Length: 253
Ligand code: PEP
Image 1: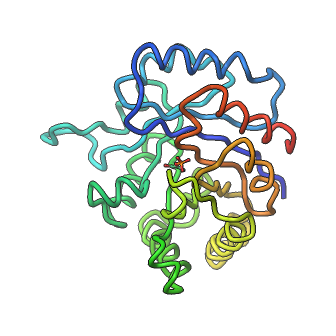
Image 2: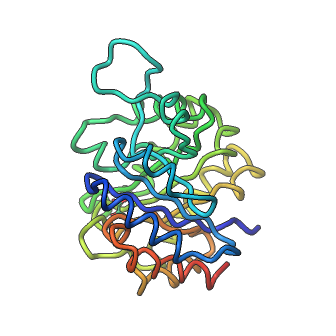
């Protein structure tokens, strides 16, 4: 089964009009027209309109979260309809920073996943354990719970149009990367979890790894059987670092 690799850059709370312009233009210029892997950027909401004019046909783009609500009295929220109107193709849901700092529960995240798909956006469902959870041997239990709540709400068929990102929290922004074997082990577990619901859908779902991915470790990670690219934080903020990761994906595509 060949799944297309995806290299996705999560800018988090970083950016400006100038940076959006320079970074997306430089990424677009650095990517070959004939590349056989996908590239996506996730700028802050306010730069999405600008991003839509810069991405061309080589780069996908989306938002870092989405409201579970469609419209109404929900001050500060941004709906999937609005993201779709901006031209977004994808949206991150359940990033660990949303879970931790903004108290998003597994159920909130499942609702967001559903709201995104209802408008034709492809959700990237993020999951992953803390160091404490890993050390106490409950990684699989935590990840299974995070994914199963979504499956329970939307059904396994919905994963035909979704991506999962496994991001061990202890590896995010810390410079500590999970070894390729550690990551593969959890990715294989996630795929087996999906297989319990559907043997035909499980092999189709791209599973990204996230957590201190760099040009120097991307090739080893992305060459693992169940690792289908990366969700990149820090290294997505400069074209040099992001393109270094894309080059590794290119070699494997
Ligand atoms: C992330 O936040 O999704 C992430 C993987 O960050 P970093 O690459 O900086 O570890």
